[in-house]
Image 1 (cartoon, rainbow, N blue to C red):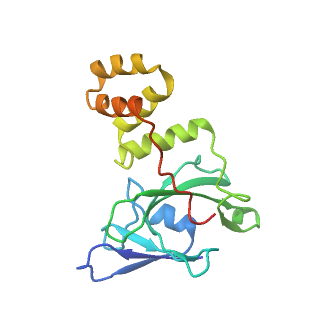
Image 2: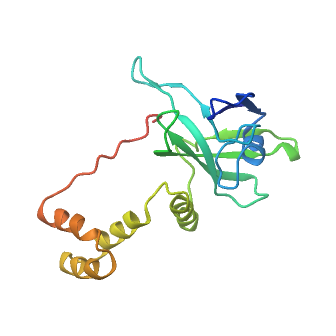
Length: 191
């Protein structure tokens, strides 16, 4: 499957670049931070459209780049698309995927979302992903620290530690201890 990369710069003369397949997209059409690039050298994006099971609804993500998670040379290559819900905005979602390349052994190149779901990632690979997301400013390091403190210590200890190491966290912790909060988790639209 070919991938059309559209340039994010409206002044670009080339406007679009093609990658022959997922391996080409990953190896030849990303910068050092995994963002897709147009042949002019500026950032680009891949526009997709998927009909949903809900009648008349469509998921139209803008793929901005890829974070690779596999070891070079392995047949099975998990990765994560950096996804935005709008063309000109920073990624706000992650789409887990993988490819399996058996072409060197007479097989085929398969792009997938796992057998019935996303690929299974080892805990060390998840930590690598979190490290990359922090480096790329997709996830805030302070929010990771907040999450760790909230999930491991009693309320009194959380407040005491927060006063010393994270002044910004105190407000959030007080809010959590005084009323119940709910998460606005939204399941992926492709399920």
